[in-house]
Image 1 (cartoon, rainbow, N blue to C red):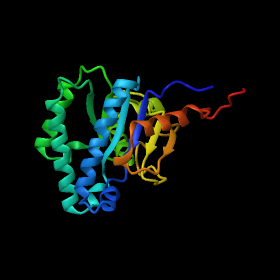
Image 2 (image 1 turned 45 degrees about the vertical axis):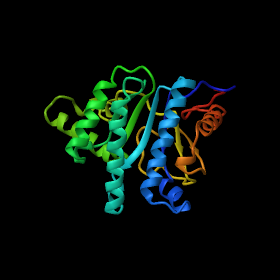
Image 3 (image 1 turned 180 degrees about the vertical axis):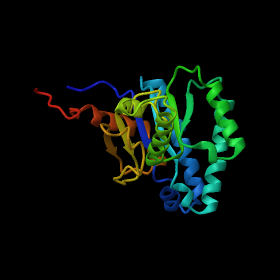
Length: 238
């Protein structure tokens, strides 16, 4: 029996650089094509599905290791698209926020992100969570520090620390974990993405480079997901 549509899908958008290289283009053109692919995908998701949450891995804590020019191009592209989403806010039914430690981003980009989150907060379409300067391990470390600080200040007790409490200290505390995680470009790893939240997620790996990933590819991923058995450690026949 096929199951319902996943309410939360997370995507590791991989392959922009290889897409550009295959076409003898600079990497920044691959990243721009990838941003356009996400924009097109969101439009179709809103028009054709009841998916509530999309979390995308836009820039990881490890991506700072890339060449300075590529990082600079990525930050400029991010600012361009955030500004475009701000301009299109009236006609777009997308609620947008971020996860990750954005305090290291430029002040003007932080202001743009805060403004976009504020003006889109009442939107009723898909909720887009953009992972920026995000790493799953870093998120858990930040959560542990905050929990330890609250224990120290006697706001919580050690005995009150449960899985549910830990989840409440994570960046994703306001919504459920993803049922489905998609990675493009043929790579078969999670790359430090949603380490805690992916414990019982289904994974779908596509050989397509991210700029070539379409809504039809998303539908295929969902079809595969719907045919899988999700037991969460138990047995369906028990």
